[in-house]
Image (cartoon, rainbow, N blue to C red; front, side):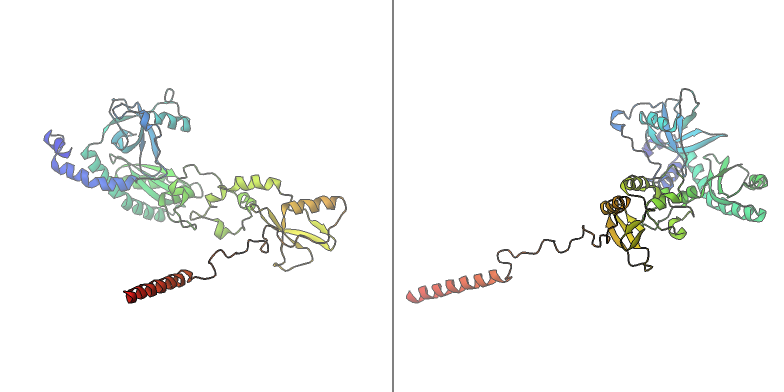
Length: 388
């Protein structure tokens, strides 16, 4: 394909070499998989030669938008395209094309018949990719310079990332801040320094952690950087439902907020707790009251200790059925003598015992039999030889 484009005069060999050198960088820039990747489960129903009406284009970080193919280009997944921006044009990669994009619009509640979509201008040329590569190389240095300017102005904000537009006419500065920040003076300084249009965009602490990435305490990649796209608020109530110790150092993630994984099993724990009695109800026994200490929801066990016992190790595991039975007896003014001291699910005495099968008592049983047969055969053979 490269030799064909050179022969037809679309570009020079130097331009194609630069474009091929940038393919590895572009692959790393977008990544082969991630939370922005969408599986096209309708790909077998669509033809690669079809001209899609709308396409989904992905940019840096978590930015992904829908564009209209007004020029009737034959586009497919993986094509680099120049799209409409304000001002100028931007460069991105097509992630979805065809009928599946209509399903994506239903998720975003976007109606292309009413709302106006931006346009896809053309497929990216080698000159566009080369210019975009130069803009990518400026992002890290621009972020460091912007951070130093913020420190000089003593603004309560942190510059987390910088994204240049494909034509290098605009740059987006992502920042986090706890309070409202007046950055008008900062925009003037950045515009004079970089000679481009500046846009400030605020993000949250979880979004910043998703951009940076890392490894969580579970040993896996952070959920916010791998698959979470919509961040839901996390409260300490989710930890209370799951009987998790309210330790801020263990419940907080790398972003400083409560871990998103606390919401994963909160609903299942809440459903399982519906059959459990109230933890605030004390069990009245003949020798005193039993106070609830902790609950093992999926094993169906509630741990109690006598009110008179202050030692932390005197917890008794009681099945939920037994707890309900004691509560029913207490309502009838009947007080049992003791709690269930042994958890019936753990019955070591009734476990299946090991039984010897045929030949298990002797490991060398085959060796003895083979030796005996061998001796008999050797003796018989020697006797026959003697007779002969």
